[in-house]
Length: 239
Image 1: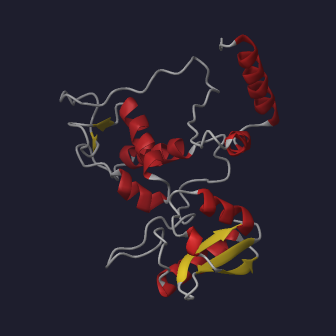
Image 2: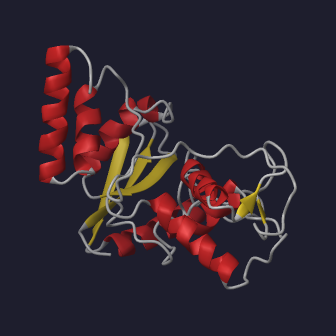
Image 3: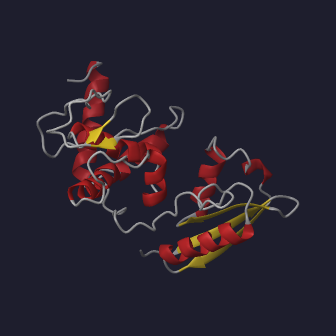
């Protein structure tokens, strides 16, 4: 991985280490902390330290060392719990490509890795499939994305779900006749280039939502999207 990246430490008024993180632009990341409901500790921050590294990989390694050795109060990723390793060692998995996700979504990549595990016998027919949490630890990707990957495999008939909230089970689709609670995903339009994504952002911060959507589109796709929004606004409904 390339790109100059900062490792930052956030302290409270008693100089206790609250949080350790990495970012290309710490100021932007801090604004994210301030706006995030998952960072209720942000108002306690009184002092910040920033250390720059020449690559994101080096900063990620330094973050891992800092979280495991300095025990910040509010880190969850990489923070060990008892004898369990920390969650999500982000960027460690070489099985997926985090750069070109606009062309190959992470859920699709994870499904591909698991499909290969099934086809090559690393996961045997009838064996339990990894849970969303186990895949989270393996790939360092949110559980929701990992569960979407499992859903893709279930749509293909490679996974079996005997009951709600149970672990997906790898089966031989041609031989298995047990009922499954899996509901197939909606059938997309007949367009091989069509990719569906869901974006979540606060409705009172439309600029952030627009930036998130724009970052996943080419210039041509963005222009078409904006034109469609203008057209919808003008006529009050979409085609």
